[in-house]
Length: 471
Image 1 (tube, rainbow, N blue to C red):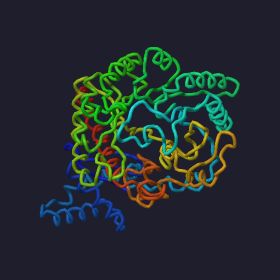
Image 2 (cartoon, rainbow, N blue to C red; image 1 turned 90 degrees about the vertical axis):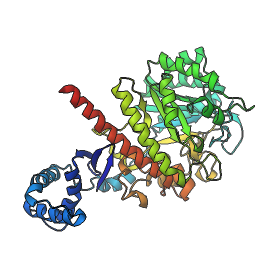
Image 3 (cartoon, rainbow, N blue to C red; image 1 turned 90 degrees about the horizontal axis):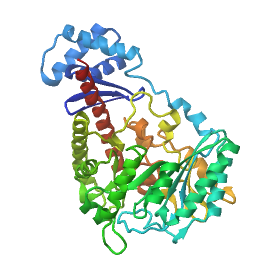
Image 4 (cartoon, rainbow, N blue to C red; image 1 turned 45 degrees about the vertical axis):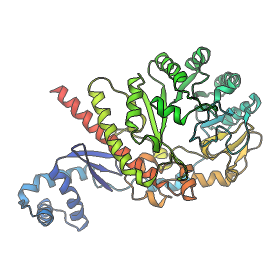
């Protein structure tokens, strides 16, 4: 499978199955699909293919090009094919049988340390932390059992991940600290290493919390939506007053105290700020170097929800953001944008390419009272209740269903060029919008494809910059 597109003047050709990216001139861009057609028609001689390409180009626009003028281009394309960099076969589908039958080991837990929150974010899928249920704080006992479960079900995996999530986890701060200490006590006797992370809205992020986080947490996610007027509109206190002014100074201190690494400010854009490039720019101008601003996922009955008619504007905005990203990088004022970070060298392992986050199998969410769900977005949907910290995974059928969730099980993924970058997308979004974890969230797919295209173009542009510096 080959995907071709033009972005910011670059003619880009992506060989989907190998992951190879080629930046080519206009002639090669037009000839590549014609070579693929010729090969499918059993042509194998370069001169014969060049003649075919010349004839087709003349039919397309009446421009006459001699086969001899195309021969060198055709030969270079065929060399790429022989090198396994173009027109490659799918090497992943044959792994599906083994992949489905692999032993299930748990490597990560999302601990819902608090089903409560001190803000009233308008788009909160967790209903201000309640998750279709009741307000509650996780006890130390439940959290301890969850960590024991993780160790016992992690097999030979050494590195384990635990995210303290909510609601707002700092509302249950003592239990967070106690559980980190307990996790550390398990490391040496069980030959494990815990990577703890924390997601917070910043309202309770004081010096004592920051000191502990910097000592014990591998990463911290700081929720902020960008400009003050946007943030305060969507992330107010329960009384309606905004939270921007109180959290931004704390976030700046956190980012600097971590040397601008191992954190990110994480925002959500909605229909209220389709010009979200301005929010990313604002966060960068405030000094944040690790930034994520992601599209809201909400039912179209909500006034802030993204709609299909918004997609063209959003796609243009990603192009605009990509150009701004490149400009700032070249000026030495760069930042990292989560959705533009793409690895064109090694990339994710086969398991990640096929199934993504591992929800329901390698990754589970734990409620304050100890129930297991496939991930935080399924919490409260009783049909996905898998078990609890006392009994373990009881509904193994749910786990087995998630084990079969991959890009080859999703009909709409099979012919999508981005499938090995998004790994089929979010299972919860697919379920909520299509009724099946093997479906897709169509609007999200459109945006994902654009982000991949922008990310690859950025790589091309920055590579050009490095070449120019080397001359």
